[in-house]
Length: 81
Picture 1 (tube, one colour):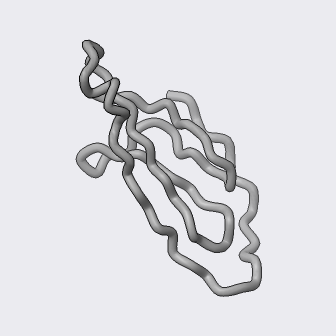
Picture 2 (picture 1 turned 135 degrees about the vertical axis):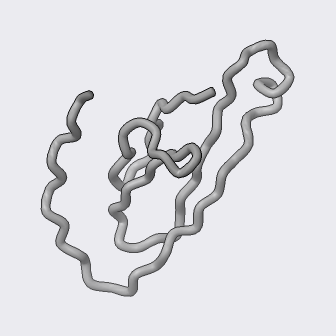
């Protein structure tokens, strides 16, 4: 399996630490009514400090794919059935 590159050192920024609010958004209605067997899930993470975080999708408490790290939005591209 491919190895994740080492993470750069983390130096916490000063300020009050805020836990994130996490929202799992449902698939679009057109995906639910369509013939495809795959659906899109969106995880929205907001309201946290400091800005850096790791987000991982899990199924049955097992990590799926590689973590999506950083302070920008992104798509991990994880698919499961």
